[in-house]
Length: 356
Image 1 (cartoon, rainbow, N blue to C red):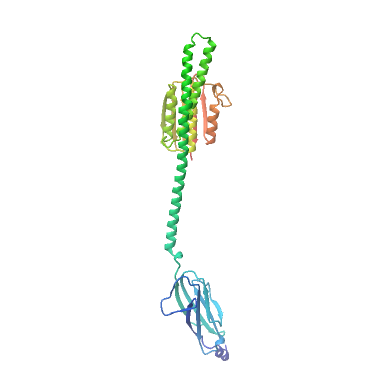
Image 2: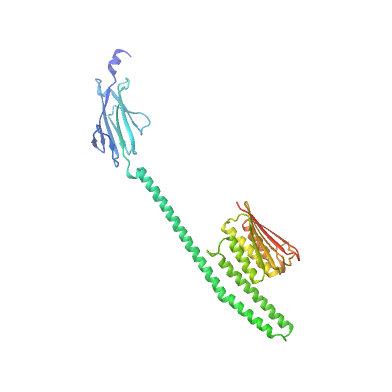
C-alpha cells in the first residue's frame, strides 16, 4: 500500500450507535434495555467518526441471537429488524474507510425482548395442565358413558331374563305338571298314547332347560356375577343341581383374569359341555379342572357317563352338534379343543389356550 492509498483510506473509523427506536419511538440506551412485547419493528442508527469523507465509510452489523453472520450495510447507517422472537440479543456494528481495515473497537447494544404471555414457560405449563385435565375429564366422561351404556344393556338383559322366567319358563313348568297329571290318569290308555304323552313331556322339559339356560346366559354378564372361576362354578352347580349331578371344580396354579372375550368363550364352551353331560351322558360325577401354567390356560371337563364314539365331523351323540359349536368357539379365540370319549368310559373335553 503506497502513501496515497493509506491517506485515502485513513485509520479505521470509530463506531457509535446513536439511537435505538422501537416502533418509531426512541429508547434510552443508557438504561437496561428490556423491551416489552407487542413491538414489531426495531431500528438501530449508527455512525462512524473519521476524517475520511462520509461517502467512503462502509459499515457491517450483526444481531447476535438472530443473524448467522455479518450483514454488509455499505454506506447505509440504519439497521432494521421486525418480528423478532423473545430472547437476549447483542447488536454489533463495525466500520472501515474504503478498503481499509475494519475498526478494532466495535459498537454494541445489548437488550432483551420480553416474551408475550403465551410465550412464557408458565403459560406452556398451564396449557399442559389444562390439556391433561381435559384429557382426564374426557376419559372420565367416556368411561361414564360406556358404563352407562353397559348398565343399560345389562338392565335390558335382566329384564328379558325376568320375562322369560316369569312367562315362558313358568309356562313350561305348568305344562309339564299338567302332562304328569295326564300320564297318571292314562294308566289304562293304549301304550302309544302314554308314549306320546311322555314324549311330549320330554320335549317340554327340554324347552324348560333351554329357557333356564337362556336366563343364565342373560344374567351371567351382570356386573355382580363375579370373576371367571366364580361364574364357571355357579354355572356348573346350577345346571348339575337340577339334574342331580355331583359337580367338583378345582382351580390349579395361580388364578389370573383373562381378556373378557376369552373368558366369555371359555364359559360358553364349559356351559355347552356341562349341558351335554346332563342331557346325554347319564353321569353321576362331573369334574372341572381350571389350570393356569405360565402363559397357558387349560379347562378340562370330565364325566363318568356312558360316553360315545365321536364322529369325524365333530357332531355329538344322537345328532347333536354341540361339539362342533364348541370347536368353533375355541377357534374364534385361537384355542385348541380336544375330545376323548369311549362308550361306557365317560367323556373328557379339554380346551387349551396360550395367553400372551
